[in-house]
Length: 104
Image 1 (cartoon, one colour):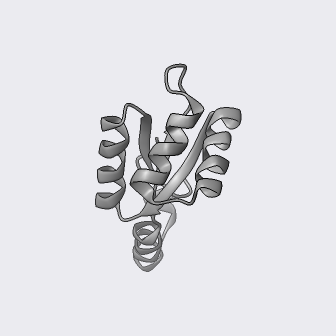
Image 2: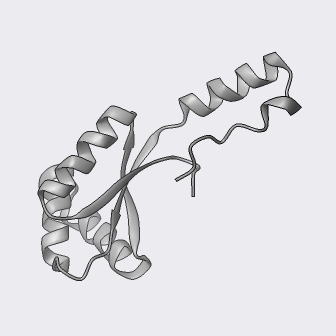
């Protein structure tokens, strides 16, 4: 995970640095669920419906994205909410991480 996405501070004026920092701070955080060899596809879909309140169709689509692509963003929001969601995914036995939108 990238710690900072700000350009080199030496190449920016103070105003440009402040603007870049503000823009960076406003990007939401994402909850990424990762594929694993343990949980069934039905269970993952169930967790998405139960915890995130996705419809059966949306949960199935996200589960298939996790299965085929290896991961999927299942929620976005504040850092605190994303961290809470990741803790919840861990409590369900799913592998999940937090990442800032735009970080790859």
